Length: 156
Image (cartoon, rainbow, N blue to C red; front, side):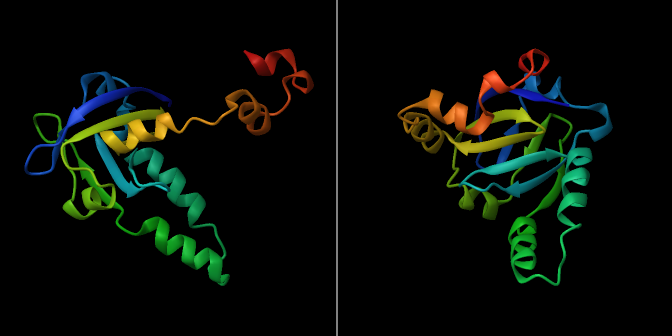
């Protein structure tokens, strides 16, 4: 599974968000239009298809809970996680407390990549993009590694 795309959306007065049809088409049928909403590492929300959440949750649950840092991470990671689904009209109800965490009121951007959909307040998201690193190429090299040391098959 791999999501892709940016979608500008609106949250209605009741906290409902219409899932864009372009994203719905990308959903794995195994998710059965069920999701888990969680806090992101930055001030955004992250929506995981239920079947993807199960894989992520299994990894987190492997952490040794006798280690304090692990327990702290586990508590923070699961804090606010909520299971939810689309209603008959394709909307998802976002809890008020989670919207407050992300400072999302009306205009949001859904940033879909890999196995998740990040939900950003539109102004915050646009600010994030204007804070582009001075040298994106250097960052890419640092994060992705030196392309000369990778095999040709790795680049395609």
